[in-house]
Length: 96
Image (cartoon, rainbow, N blue to C red):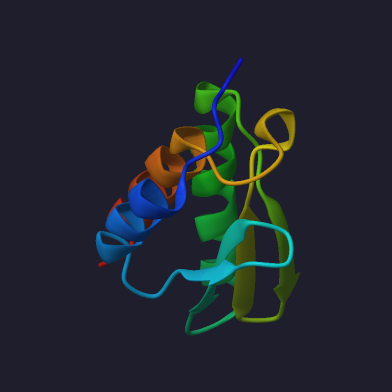
């Protein structure tokens, strides 16, 4: 089973993830992404989908025209885990 991050590990991980915000109420991290148009946003989502599928860890997300919001939490751990941090780092690598 995946372990939930403790406060110290969570804060250290968030220092590596500029733009990601911790939601204490549900112990998740989220980031809003903005693109030039819908096609670019959708292409980004397709790339994230491939990363998530490879990792076996799927985000909660939404899309509205050129905006994508991604939230990560590990349901099995009851909150934020190393799986979320690893996927967030991979997602960030997609950005120019």
